[in-house]
Length: 197
Image 1 (cartoon, rainbow, N blue to C red):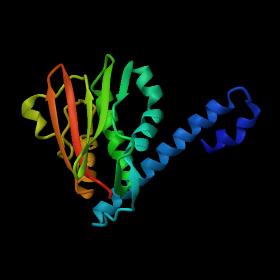
Image 2: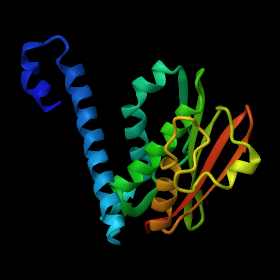
Image 3: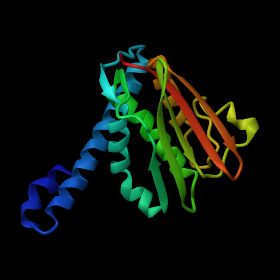
Image 4: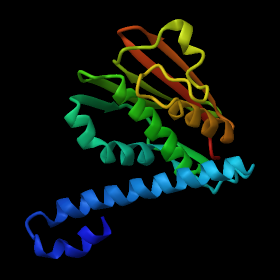
């Protein structure tokens, strides 16, 4: 990505598109690097958070923009519905980005023939109630209680780490998470995070 950005001056017509795509690559690789570093820290018992003031709404919008091509290729429509102008929390930006990314990718993987994802953030007194609903295959009721366990996956190609990482990040931010699902109708993942007053 860095090499492409150095060479891009020769391609004036597509310069902006190439810069945008290489920025996406660099942001994603930085996120993966942080995630792997966090895994190593967890194995050593060091799970220190870089806590800052974060607005969840721009964070969601940033990830939706990052994944826009993937959604288009898979014929998936995404509808953010926040009904609030900001949702401030105190937390680790990279970890919260990873949490949202994992939830979006999980929904995307459950819809092999296209579908719809609805994302909402609502004001619930002392916390922000967030949810992501997809129109995917759904999860059987007897398997729903296991989905946040490490290495448990309902998908043949899944590692079982995506939702367990989500659960761990929520716990580190003193939040709550739960899921609802119906076979052939879809799944909703709810999570609550304390307000960053």
